[in-house]
Image (tube, rainbow, N blue to C red; front, side, top):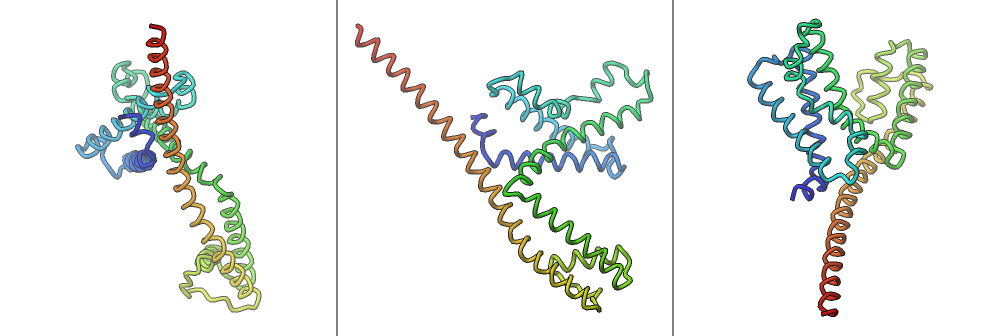
Length: 244
């Protein structure tokens, strides 16, 4: 039952959401937006921590090579370490300034939890060359901003704002190009935006569709393996009966 749950494509999406919430919680506490002593923080932190403990333990239990799984998922292991309890047990607070050390531990956990998001982002960027499209957009925006800043005497910040608004075809109209060069750049930016943003949407859709397809393939593979084991047992029983 648990193996079926963790192999479901919806489970991976849920874990991504949990990772995002955990990162937001840690960042909010580090920026003093939420008190680490509040009941809300303790409940939310404990709940998310328990979810990640379940995720790590379940995947470790069902891993074919547990040693390799541990080596490949060291950051996930760090993310579920009970830093507060360990610090109290070893009396770390008496050896060093506890506040600074605990801040470092929180930052370590933040990096560890963020690794889940980076893994997903890396896979997404490699889907159909999405990173190439984003690099093209970035380069086009930066070049257009620089040219507009020089040609029309705009500040770099205003030029950057205009380039992004133009490429996304939002067109607020707060900054309007006056020269022929700036208008030509605007046309190029709009064409790039129209062409590439449609591609980005299609690639992201394909990423989630492929993820769900892979999850279904894995589920079918597991069912086939189970059926093969059952057939082997039946064949063994038939052989035993034929010998008798």
